[in-house]
Image (cartoon, rainbow over all chains, first blue to last red):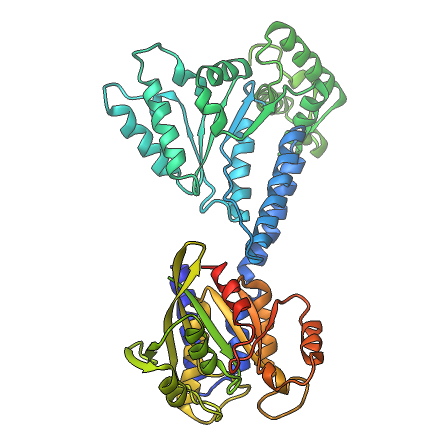
Length: 316
Length: 202
């Protein structure tokens, strides 16, 4: 449709030239000189900066931030190259995200979708989150249909497959293999308009990629999501409470770090978990409400503050 | 088939160049497709001599609409076809004659669709302030456009009228980023270079 419009514009200019309404210079100027930046584009640019700032505000994730800046620079240069008539390669940006749960994989994917949309790489920039059950069928032929459906849904955006390694489990007769084949076909067919992200635990993903050597080469971007450090988790906690207009007392912070350290000792997988922090905070906010209700009288300061006693000890 | 458009101000020698270039590539009879503004194409056949007489003249605006010939350019051991399109001249400002304005609109439209642009100027009048023949605003605009367009070359025509090379040097200095080929549609000077340039891009 956009091409149609542009064509219409050209004809309009030529018609005005023919009717003697504009001079030849004006006509050439309008045809050859690039259109000035439209308001839309300015808006795009502003909010793109906003989105990149949002990414920058995320705690940790240094590699992802660097990557996005690289891609941004690459896109700009490709545009310039196109203007100069040089070969501009389309970007292949299928990715693999490796890391424990709660390390920011989905959050980053969602943000990348928006950023790529603003950069003009993706048409819509939405995120379709799927897992094994959404892709693998129950009988022969069913799988390909399911995969195609998901790909169709995610055209113009990102198809995010969580725990992608589970596609390869279940042995020879499992339909997971069929799903992988259908995905590979889809990503080749729609490489201009679809970004595929496979996500999962580090070790399982490595194993999965090793068993499917063709897959690895099709995903040029690999990002590791390392576990958060203790102080990063505390910073995440602070940013969560800040967003909700609460604050953590010193005792609450101490309790939080104690709890997180304890969890790390007990359970390795949850060790780097931002989700754990979020859950702890959610629970603390509820407990604070109960505590305040019991006392009956409270100041503004009381309403704001989460104290050590609000942080729950038990299971989260 | 790639399209190669000759553009420039009126009376710089576009049509004569088209006919003579055809002759240079071995045509004895020349089939010219005349395309009017509604897109209708009429083919007429000429001998080289009759084409020169009928189509080119020393008066400006002899060409009122697009006219093209198909040429085969030998490349290595084979041949490649290219459509060379001659256009009506572009002038600055608003011309009072609607036929001429229509011709210019057609020229600009063809410019957007062409793979190669041969921008022809009259080097013999370059640097002077003659009303029609010196470089006009449109020439500078085309040169500007050429910076972003692949396959844009300046043909400095009428070198046969030059006494020295100083004007060509001057022109190349003014457009340092462009490739300038000095040609003479009359004598055939520079046709080799044009052929090489075109054949590399088709």
